[in-house]
Length: 418
Image 1 (spheres, one colour):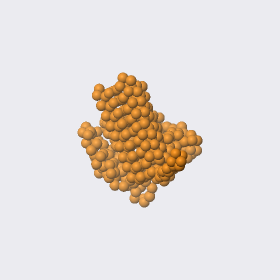
Image 2 (cartoon, helix red, strand yellow):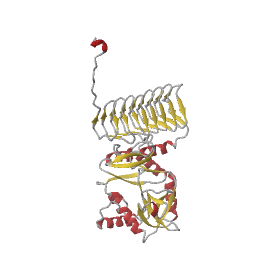
Image 3 (cartoon, helix red, strand yellow):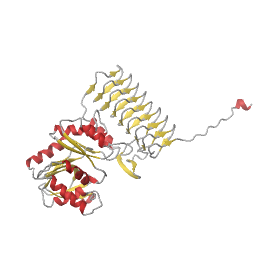
Image 4 (cartoon, one colour):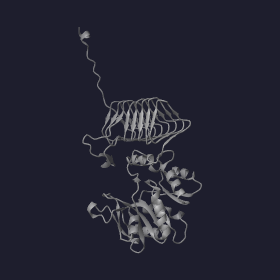
C-alpha cells in the first residue's frame, strides 16, 4: 500500500474502515471479536476497539507477517475453550455488502455442523484461489491461481469463512506448520485437507467486493461508499453560497464552506471544515476534513485525505494522504497516450492497475511546488519535496527532494549593445 499507511485505518467518510466494519458486524449480532493486529497498528486498533463497548473486543499481535494461519494461531489464546466453537474468519479490508454476511449466517443457522466459505462468482478469470464444488454445493478442494483455462468453477474464495469447530481448524493449521512448509498458505492447505473428511459448503456471492491490496484500490472503496449516499445532506453549520451548485447525491460536513461559483457534483463527500473555493469543481470524489480546494481547482474521481491544500490545480483519479500540499498549477496526469491500462511499480515490479485512468498516489506530508506534473500511476513518498516545474515520471521515495536544475541566461538587449 506504499506510500499510504495502515489500510484498516483509512477513513471513508466520518469513520475509519475498521470502526465502520465493526459497527456492521455489531448490527449483524456479533458480540465477541478478536482483531489480529501487527506491532505498528496495535495501539491504534486497541484505541478504536475501546470505542465500541457493546462488543467484547480483544486485540492480539501477530509479530511477523507470516500468513493467515499464523494470525489465527496468535488469536487462539483469546478464544473460549469449549468443543465445537464456531468462528467467523474475515478481513477488515475486504469491503462487501451486508448481504454476504447475512447469507453466510443464514446458511450456518440451517446446519451448524458444516463449515461455510463464500464463493465470489466471476465470469472472467481472477488470479486467486478457486473452489472445487460438487453439484450439491459441497466444497471438495481449492486450487490457487489455476489459470484461465483450468478453472474448476467460477467461484473464487473470499475470506468470509464460518468454521464449525475452531479447535479442529487450529489443530490442522499447526500440523501444516509442523510439516515445515515455507510458503504462507498454511491456512488454505489446512482447509483443503479438512475438506476430505468434513463438510464444507459454498455460499455464492455476486455483489460488490473491493479488497484493499494496492493503493489505487482506495478509489474502488471510495466509489462504493459514495454509491451509498442518498440525497443531499448538508450540515446546519455549513455555508453554501447562493451561486454555488450542488448536483446529485452530496454530503457536506460541519462548518464546511462552498464559495460562489463552486460546483459539487455527486456522488461526492465534503468533510468538516473543508473549504471549496470560488469556481472550484469537485465531482465523484471524497474530500475529507480541513482541506482547502482553492480557486478553479478540479478534483475528479479522487480521494483526498485530511488537511490537504490545493490551488488552481487538477487532481484526477488520484489518492492523497493527509497534509499534502498541491501548489498552484499542479496536475496529476491520468491517461496514457496509447489509452492502455495504467501500470504502477510495487516493490520494484510493474503492476497493471486494471484502470484506464489513474493519477498519482501521494504520501503524507508531501509538498509539490507550483506547476509540478505527475505522470499516470506515479507515487510520491511521505514528506517528499518536489520542486517547481518538475515533471515526475517515476516514483519518489519517502523524504526525497526532487527538482529540475535551471540555468538562467541574461542576454543583452539591443539597446544595451548600442
